[in-house]
Length: 240
Length: 201
Image 1: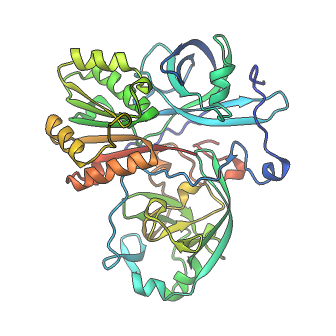
Image 2 (image 1 turned 90 degrees about the horizontal axis):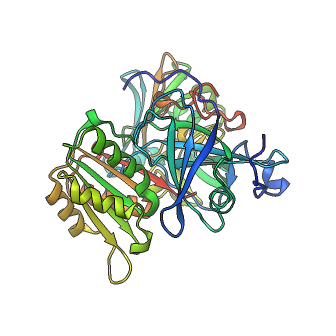
Image 3 (image 1 turned 60 degrees about the horizontal axis):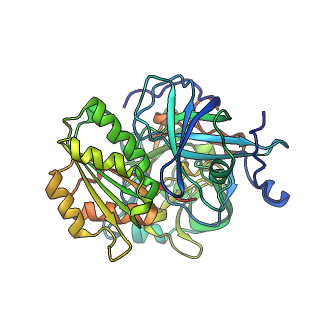
């Protein structure tokens, strides 16, 4: 561990430069933002919205884009029906809007090319977003690192970046995709599925799990049961 | 500068007064941690006070549970923005631990250490005088593993990352040494009312 960056982490005004639909409920938002430090794959930003009366709401969102030198980041936000901030993005935000962002944040759930692999990624629902950043970074910077994404969602229409992931699985020789649909006769991730992932990937050097707490807790326990060193298992949970 | 088109859902004033800046109220109890739940055998569990690497006093689970108990109820605040009101905790106060060990705090700072190798720093003055405890019960029941059971630190006036889960001991340090998150850009102190989330806040 290196010394922490001693600089304060100021709020910055970011400009929304692109919006595109990802799934029925998830949209991609690209921001032009001048961070003063590089983004690492797996990090997140804080978003702050301010009402005319000064009332503010803050939330955290994972960065989907690979670290890039072009001063932009991509967020993927699921528009929750009762989401105070996500609902604003879904229904109100337009290209050209300015939004306050702060980041990049988080030094635990990150993967750098020098961290190597094999890399086991397990995502539940929109928990795949920071894993997507890792996969994009890996493809650009370290395509020889073996990686497997076990991605569990309820149904096919909810798969984030479905086409991109399928293309990566087809074209990238060291990347494998295990897509698990829990509805329509499917099942939750279980010991057999983990055994298959480990068989296909080989012993992982790092595992990154992201999703709701029940998903992450279950996968973490299954990986411990399979004999993985807990120090190799990194988790990020959302909810709340 | 306001955000175009954002009105938000400002909570009622009674709620706002209890919410530190940038926080929102949740009825859930979200789970946030850096890795898997550690697997802890109560027969092998121990809690140790150390000065640097030198052990000062250690308790087994049974010994720990025989110590005088204390309760605290109130609001908790997570740096990830959620706050939860009216939580109820029970455990052994920092003061009671020192008293049972027959010592005074040997330094002004300490690191709480978890079974998952997590660490976080807390000044002694923020634990002493009834301000902090090692909690074993939440809402009248043993703390579930997801929330840090069998025992977690509780320092409720600081952001909740200071309330280390699965705590196995407190290590007194000469200087204020950063722990896991503090070495990754989070604030050394973490007062939610001053919104001390990150370095420099």
